Structure formats: structure tokens, C-alpha cells
Length: 557
Image 1 (cartoon, rainbow, N blue to C red):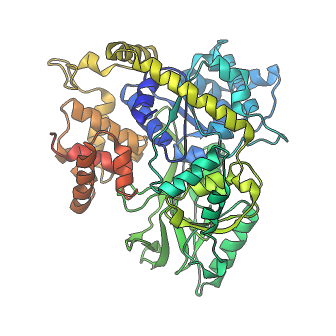
Image 2: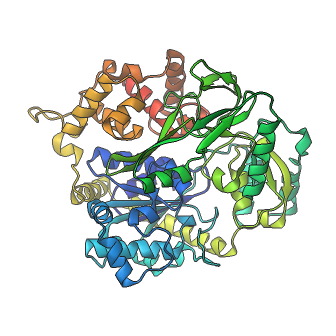
Image 3: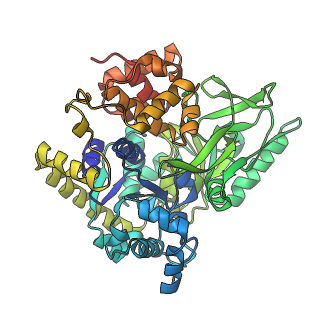
């Protein structure tokens, strides 16, 4: 299924399981869906199975959102107590669409506990109290996180069946463009690794002593990561500089952000240290996973980083935010760097890398090898320190289930393909209105232009427009409005559709002229409709928000 086909199904308000191989664009589709919901006046509740995944989507863990915390079981009385908490009840009552990222790492037990609380708060026996539920994940990646000896996959729960999920299995690939490497990953995913695949991987074997110091190393155990990072920073001469994380918001929410943030609470750096950026730059200067070396420190004390492609960047503090109902509830601020000598496979999930040193000699969990290898774009970027049999194994139960998911996705695609556009749009319109939103064409001429005499702009758009005019950057506008940057851009796109946006309103948010030209050429090649190919054609140098702003600024054909 293509990204466009999946997005069409999501917009109808169906309960959906969105899956696909690493690099197929699951996060991109969800970001587009969230932007569409917000433009329609529907605020989704975005959650994830782990803290790291939650920081990637500016949301919170499902455990925190539902109020269940780390509980592995709850009595009826305990469910009632949680549902009686004002902040939990208010959050769930106001919700309309619940998105759960990295659902493969969520145990069936946690899934069911969150459902019980939702039913209690919303006084409904329907799954999750009648919320529209979107589940996102890939079961070939890391398995459920649980203190139980053997956590059940979430799809084994009767609740999964009761949700009547449409499966959308993305089949396009945007991360890897190396046919041989894709063949290895596909064989690994299908449980059909042959000696030729193993031999191809072993051609990338390397000795630790012969590797450049600035290539990140992925290990299966935390102990190896901590040891290597400490050893390497200690080897560098001179005094270190320390950067302490700051925070705003309730302690419990802040702690969740800290656990999920790839930058440490206390960041210690020296000149010459190999580092990795842990966040996307709004100006497109770096992305999460960009590698570099600290070349020194500026007069303001901030690290000066030279990236591997020769760009010099001052690593200014950035914020990680937890957003709920369109408002920022908690935030942390830190220099967006971490030492790049080593990190765990677990913390690498969701990242894309040009190169990585990978040690799978101690792999102990299904999916670890697949996750680690699939972070890298090409086989030539893999430097392998070790490999064991478990690293090339995927969960046997998931192999069969994946066939079922693919078949279900084909059936869903055929079902929606047989519908006419009028019927599909009618379903989308009904969904938006049922969730308290406003269908744009009710106030426009059907082509995005506001009908004459319809009055002033909606308050949220007018406020965003004035804020953008008054602030110096996209991040400042988002902070002033208490929104995330993608929502600010979505508001600008909506204003453009209404004929209420001039380039002068947002020209100060645009990147340098050379970047506008480069992005414009990539947009022209793709006709500007689908942004994922543009993002990858530009090798991730510019975030989606920057590409969207440039698209807004270019003359309409």
C-alpha cells in the first residue's frame, strides 16, 4: 500500500493499524494525518509505547496518558481510582483520536489496562470508550517491554480484534537505495537468511582498532555503550565543558521527557569529541543522527560542531516538548548533542544513519539485528564488529502474523479502491464533523478559496498569522503559540488555501536562497505533492517543515 492510500483510509475515521518496513514512511504518514486533523479542528492524542518514541512525536507514553503508570495489573477499584483523577479524566474525556506509536513494543496487558481506564472515564463499553484508535508499528522490530517473563504481543489481545482494525501495510522504501542491502534485510525479515546473505554481511567485518573514532557504534547492552563513551571522552586532552538540562512543567511529565531524550541530562563535551545531533534543526542545518566533531566552543560557551559534510554549526539549546490538546504541557531544554562513540540498538530505533559500527556478537533479543542493520542506508555504511545467530533471527510467531497483515492490507486497499471519490470524501467529512471539527469546504468554494462574505479568519489562524509576523523564527512562533512547529506550518498552509497569506508574512522563516533553490528543484522533480521523496532526495538535510515552507513560497504552477 502506498502512503497516499493509507492516508486516505486514515482520514475516514476508521480504526487503523499502520505498519511497514523500516524506512517505509510510517512516521511521515502519521505526521500528515495529524496535520490534517489539526487543520480540521480535531486535536489528536499522540502517545507511544516508550519514552524515546514519545519524544519523536512530541507526545507522552500511553502509560502516562492513561494514568496506569507501570502497573501490570489493576483491580476494578484501582481502575475507578485512576479514572477519578481529574487530570486523567479531563484528558480522556476531551480526546477523540488516540494514536499509539511503536505499538510492537507495547504488551497486550498494558494495552488492555489503558482500554479499561478509557471505558471507565467515557462510560462506554466500546473499545477505548469509542475513541478512534490508530496503532503504528512493525512487529519485526523490538518486542514488547514488560517486567513479565514473557510479554504477549499486543495483537494477541481480544481487544485488537474488537477494534475492527483496517491494516495499512506500507510497501514503498525511502531509507535504503542499495539493492543488495535491501535483499539482505528482506531475507532477514522473511526468516530466509541464507549463507550468501551472511557472507555479504561478513564482507563488512572490521577491526575496532582500525575504525575512525567519529562513527557511532551500536551495541545490544548498555554497559558496553557507557564504557566506550567514557573511555573515549577521557582520552581527549583539555578540560571538559558541561551542559545541564533545564525543564518546565510537572515533575512526572518532565521525567518522562528526560527518559526519552537522546541527549543526556548532563552533557559533557571536549574539543575533538565525536558527537551526534539528537534533534532536527528547524533551519535544516542538521537532523537527528547527523554526525560531527566538536571543533571548539564559541564566546557564548556553546559547542561548535563540524559535521561530516563540512558544515560548521553552533549547537544552540533546543526544546523537547510534550504536547496535549494542542498545548505544551512540559518541556526540557538541552544542547541537542550526545557523544557518538556508542549507543544501544534500542535507542537507535527510529533513526537513519549513513554509517554505523555495529556489534551484534551479544545480541540476545529477536529483532535486535534487524533494527540495528536497518538504521543504515547502504551496506557500504555498515562496519560489523561481531555477529551471532540470534542477531539474524526474527520472532517465528511474527513471521506468520506478518503474512496475515499483508493480506489484510491488500483487502483494505481493494475495498477502498472500489469506492468512488464522492463516497470516500463523504466518509471523511462525516468523521471530521462527528469529532467536533469543521470540514474546510463548508466555508470555501471547494477549491480552497473562502466564499465571499464568510467573515474573518478563524481565531486560531488569525492568532498564528499575527504570531508568525511578530516572531523571528518558526521555533519562536511555535513556542509563543504553545504548539509544535508542524502545526504552525499547517496553519500557514491553510491560510494560503484561503488566500490570506503573503510571502512577506513568513519570508523570515525561510532558509537561505541557496537552500530555497535546492529544495525548489527537488520539489519540481516530484511535482511537490509527496514530500517524503523530496526529503530523501535532499538526504535529510532539511526537515519537513522547511520543505513545506519553501513549497508555500514558490510560485504556483
